[in-house]
Length: 566
Image: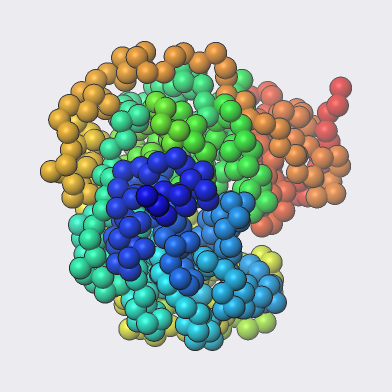
């Protein structure tokens, strides 16, 4: 008897069987039904729209939040011989037009776009001319203000769906509380869509929280994990300065961690990520900018150097471990002083409407000053005391995702496009958002401090308490971490060492330098290079001074130095 779903799964995706509820979801979607899918990271959400796309007559339009993620998924599909493509702002106009034209001619089965693409004049009208067989909303939690990563343009997708003729729609996310689920259903107008979920339980992941009382104990525990488990592993840091300090400490002990954060150039981030993905034992220190779209199945541990701000963020980040089904350790190092970091982030994430209006006023009236303006200058104008205040960055993110400007200050490509009205701004910053965010932070803290089964309480947080089995034996509420490690993960015989990355040049100032080199820096003497990175303002190095082991940073073009070669 013919089985088109299974035959397509095997022929086009290389899998022999469906996992969990994948078959039921695909059958429902192929038949033209709406669906709501909540699956843990790594459980195979993408297949739930990619496979039906091949069996339905017409184009599947996928709305996705990140360009890099779209590019990765498109590349993977095309490697399987599936006609797929994406359109985004980093493409030349001619290439975008060619891809849209191919979709309209019926040459594509899947087309990815960001939600902001619908703001581009003419896009909605043109794409409505295609036969939209299925609309897939990836990372659907982004459309809810109750979610942990709200994007204003996601909130307009219900109207976009109606304009496209209300095609069958599948919403997908790994992190949706009952409140977020209700928001998604209402916004997309799929109130009656059945819910499929796999919960948040993955039996191969061990969840642990270890309270530490000083920085030395914190570092000792991280070192014990790295030396015991080996790698590959991710250490998530909340602050770039904490990440840099941790890198120095690890290098002093013979480790060579990769790094990933927002101050690196796009090329450096891409290089570090590619190096991590290709390595069998690398250690990477990263902020939460790292992870989405990283398809690496063999991550053996994830350590949270600081507590995440929400259980949603935590769940997403640990979901990157052990996708190969083998055992992986997820341990959060709870240090009381770190709570203030996330409390500060929560305040920064909630600028009031008056502050955002000031940002808009400055940006909308830059005029000729745009050539000499940057984000630091914007902070100087708006912030009189604490230049670390992150409200400016929050406002820039909201304005960018709402299509109010495009380009970058430092590249000379910044262009103001439109000024949002006060009513629109109010929808981005509801009065109770700060209170909700603070409650979410408190919930995260209480989860860390609670006794009992961590997985059961995490499961319940997402509204699945009735489906969780008793006695998980895969969290420190029921079993000691070391006992689980002894039973599931053999001791590592390797120290995590990344693959070699190409050293950045020194912007014309002497020979190219790399980590481990020695420099003679005027006024400081002999210094060891612990990091080289590009920023928007040029090449910088972090060095450790030999005479007292103090660390500092400097731009290569702003101090006199020479490389010591012998």
